[in-house]
Structures are given as C-alpha cells and as structure tokens.
Amino acid sequence: MDSAHVVGLENHEALQWLQEQGWDVRIDGAEVRVHADVIGTRTFTLGRIWQSATRLEPDADSYNPDLVYVNFVLTGHLMIQSAEGRSRRVTAPHFYTHSARRPVSVSSTEPHSCLFIAIPRDQLIELPWVEGQAPGPFKTTSSFRKVFIAAASASLSTQIQERQVGFNFWRRGIQELLLAALAETRVQEEVEKSSPRELHLARAYQLIEENYRDPNFSTRELARSLSVSVSQLHRIFAAEGRAAGATIRSMRAARARALLKVSEKSGSELLVIAQESGFRSVRTMRRLLKDDVTEGPSA
Image (cartoon, rainbow, N blue to C red; front, side, top):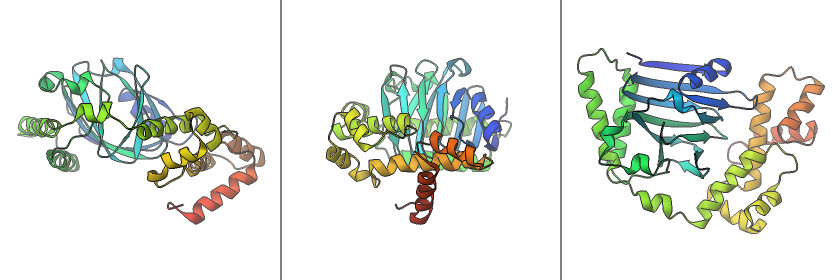
C-alpha cells in the first residue's frame, strides 16, 4: 500500500475525505474546507492537516486497532472530548492522543492545523501514558519536539513514497524522533494540575460552541452556566486577547459568512441565516458583519 498524497477539498468532497479517514463530521450546514498532506501505509501514517471549523466524532471501526495517533496542534485551538465526557482545550504547543481503544471527539470554532502521526502500539511500550492517559492534552519539554516537527514537515513537503529505496529507514528515523520528543513529556503536571482558570476557560469555550446560535445566549448566561460573576468571566478571558462577548459575536459572524456563501441572499433566506447564526434580525447580522470587516482580526 502506497498512499502519499496531497488533498485540497471543499464541502462534499472534504466531508467524504474526512469520513474515509475515520471521522463522522458534523458541520450544521456551514462550509467545510480541508487541506492535507499524508504519507500512509498499513502500519504507519504521517500527516499535516488544515481544516475549517468542524466537529468530528470518531468512527472507531475505521481505525487500525494496532495504531496509536499522536496529534500536535500547530495553529489555532480545538476542543477534545474523551469517551468519558471530559472536555479540554488544546492549543500549540500541546498535543493529544487517540486510538481505537481510546477514541476522542474533536471540535473547533475556527480554522486550525495539526501534524499527526500514527505508529504501532508496541513502539510505545516504554511510554504507556501515551494511550493510558489519552487524550490529554500533553506538553513535551523536549527540544526534540522542534526537530521532529521539522523533519516530519520536510518529509511531507517532499512527498516521500513507500516504494522509495530507504523508506523503511526513514520511517524508523521519524518514529525514533517522535519517541525522543515524547520522552520528556510532563503528563501529570499538564493533565492533572490545571488551574481553576484553565478549567473554567475550557468549559466556557465548550458552552459558547454549544449555544452561540441561540440569540438569547449572552455573557450573562455564560457566566451563570459557569457559576461565576460577569466580572470574573472577564478576568477568565483577559489573557485570551478576545473577551467572551467578542468570542460569541465572532462565532456568529463566521457562521453567517459561511452560510451566506452558499445562499441566494433573498430576503426570506437572509432571515433564516440570521436566525441560524444567533442573530435576532437581519439588520443586526449586517451591522455586525460590517463592523467585523471594518475592525479586522484585532477587534
């Protein structure tokens, strides 16, 4: 099997490709785009993927049961949810893991990119936490992380093929670099000693993602769901560079833009789009979209 390939897909084709990779995709009618570079064999996969906001549910039957996936977040952030229901936010330079034994749901409200590698479980026998404490998130303190990501990225850009002479030596080298990077991971510190702010923040992002399409959902409702005051909520988001209210508005605007791209923009359709995106009226939606474009990403 030789499956080195590059894909750049939108909408139906993107959904189909993600499903072929073992994911049940939920986008609620919004646009989805994917760009990926993948080198894959029956017992090894290395890939780099950028994708728009989506929610991915695992299809464990589609995974090779002998492989464990390690996923390094490169840009953006995402939410992971274990089979037990625990949700955590993952940002660079953190990573998370999953497998057929330890499936994970992944959701994002903005575009993000990851570098992922799947290797046989028996290669991780000296690092049992990789699967045992999945999905994480984890953080490695090793300088080999940069070396591994650089080598993996260069390999993907070169589009190495399984039939090439030396492929097995290269694969072993990439796997050894991964193990070197994982050797200095502080599992307990990262997973079990999160601060109250980090826990509140992860829960806040999950609640926003679940409720932003409700026009009655506001920072006051978010604070109430978190059992904190509105002023405490502002402090929780202070280091994020974007307030909770701005985050809600940004997600509503992003959904509206995605739906507008595939609409005929008739009066009745605009009203439906406004309602589906969490706006009380078309006028409110238009005003926010105009302000969002005028102010730019720093807003």
